[in-house]
Length: 477
Ligand SMILES: NC(=O)c1ccc[n+]([C@@H]2O[C@H](COP(=O)([O-])OP(=O)(O)OC[C@H]3O[C@@H](n4cnc5c(N)ncnc54)[C@H](O)[C@@H]3O)[C@@H](O)[C@H]2O)c1
Ligand SMILES: O=c1ccn([C@@H]2O[C@H](COP(=O)(O)OP(=O)(O)O[C@H]3O[C@H](CO)[C@@H](O)[C@H](O)[C@H]3O)[C@@H](O)[C@H]2O)c(=O)[nH]1
Image (cartoon, rainbow, N blue to C red; front, side, top):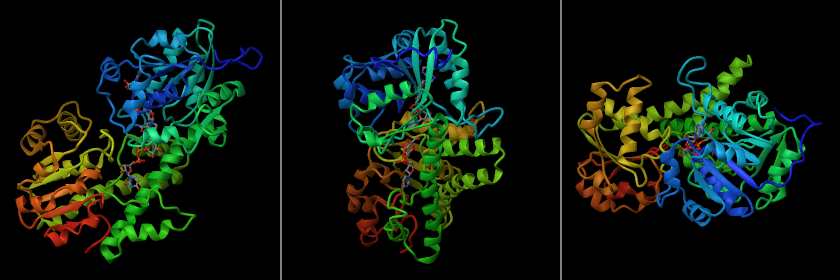
């Protein structure tokens, strides 16, 4: 049952934390708590035994700068990765829920609503195995008012256990997770019980300055997470919409971004035009916001936010159209080097990466692809391409399987990918691409040698002077 004011037990300092979900959020956030709070035992649990084994191995499941040192510094001391879910929940005074909340692919709200199956299963498990009092913390990104359902499920605990529910959404970005966790812009904690809020504030206060610890009511906290992502993605879609206009008018989108970003009311961040935003969060969270607006009878608000995703889809398609148009209206049987497959640099995450959609559309144009990414494995690339062709169907068609098998190779360096290629498409802004030996690459490419830079990372290298036909996003030369 959830605790009422009169029967609420005294809440002391947190000594044992359990985090359900050892993913991109659960792993790094808990490693940071263990690193900063040696007096707290942190157990990270997952039903995926392979993932837990990776967290306990030399090769962590996530590539994230600085993560290795922090995990290896505390693992086996006050940071434990385990599949013993029940035991870890039972022992903890505070339980974080950090499981995935993907877009629903079936039934009511398919394609937009968040699938809350995994959250509900966690709440049921906590209710089933808990004794005493626990603070349950929503770390996953959730639709506003999810805590109501979590509280209702916990209230059915038969052991007599009592609970407080807090919302503590995570704002880290992949690739910079450790820096973001070390020095967050803010830590947001929403809740109803002052004592429970204070217990979590005290954990973060061990390294986060007091003025960055923001407490709100439960619903504001839940809604702020979706809103923050919607605003961030909206900036990217806004500048990407202007990139199309720049290409038509000889304006340069990077110059426009610089000019508007110097207005302190607009600010310079998140104005980098690109082949389109990717990642596991932006699209999923905006679609969820759109669904919520419709659910609450606000179709105009839903349409407004839907446009951010529509513009992003347009940007990805527009990139391929431009490639085909520039390469004399056909890429059929042409070799195209794909530089980068992750959704941004410094991560091995490919969820919703623009590269998946660009590669799919190039394959449908019958191009041959040679793909290189410094952190993404061949198995992952092939699995992503199979999934995008499968498009929710039960099975991959024989035709799609052949298209991938016959036309995709994954290689282990950027120069090899470009060997005998008609074009290079830069889809992730890995730093190493700017250091490639372009004179050598040009020699080995088919002529004219095209470079389509979906990140404008090679813009300053004057590749035209070397002899490339260089095209980026949002400018024409
Ligand atoms: N990835 C990010 O950068 C990021 C940043 C902020 C917030 N978020 C949000 O955080 C949440 C988690 O995201 P993620 O990227 O870490 O997901 P993830 O898929 O990497 O990890 C989730 C983990 O939860 C485990 N899990 C699912 N159900 C479980 C259960 N019943 N018991 C135990 N383990 C279970 C899965 O096996 C998986 O390992 C999502 O709601 C996401 O929107 C993600
Ligand atoms: O100016 C920009 C900034 C970003 N992007 C792209 O946008 C996507 C998302 O980038 P980023 O936001 O840096 O990474 P995420 O890890 O997806 O982080 C976002 O999503 C997380 C999950 O909810 C939040 O916690 C973070 O605050 C939020 O930044 C990537 O494809 C980027 O390449 C651009 O194209 N231009």
